Length: 208
Image (cartoon, rainbow, N blue to C red; front, top):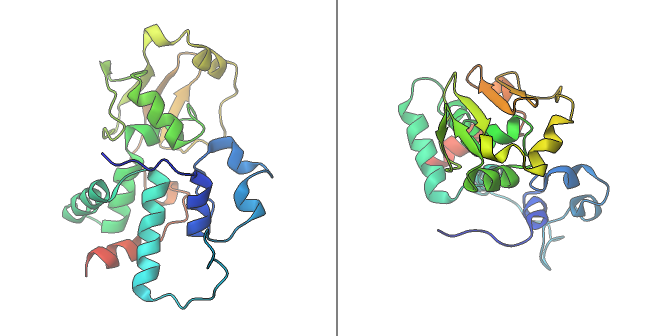
């Protein structure tokens, strides 16, 4: 499967917004986006009139990059959300939020989604007692995500125990650093998702 291996900061510059793809570094003054918040390329400073389609496309690209999914998989999330009851755009964001790698990130176990994806693919977690190493695995209400017993002595996870609980953790998840166990206590709603995403524009793009 294709994978983007270029600079993550370049993606933020292309979308004209911080996507927080590199975790803690994105909050520091050394973040490249702070120094040069313009699109990459020699024509970055040229004024262009962006069409409605162009705005919708950029919104889709931004969302894909935030969650780290490719086009085919992203389209599947949209089609699944369209079949669900409720608002399609909100359903789509809820499905993206319930990816295992995103839940690990939201629990504060990883500083970025890419780091969470790496931890998941390296088989560090169980879901309801079962080994799961698929980042896109869909988490449901009441699911318990825990660090595997034979991984708890890893220095990365022992360092988590010394950290205080993150007050900014979304209200739909909880995580105990002492036991290295978390739980989904509610399904995420649009109000719980802090990403600056105009999901209605993505729905309009796919509806054409």
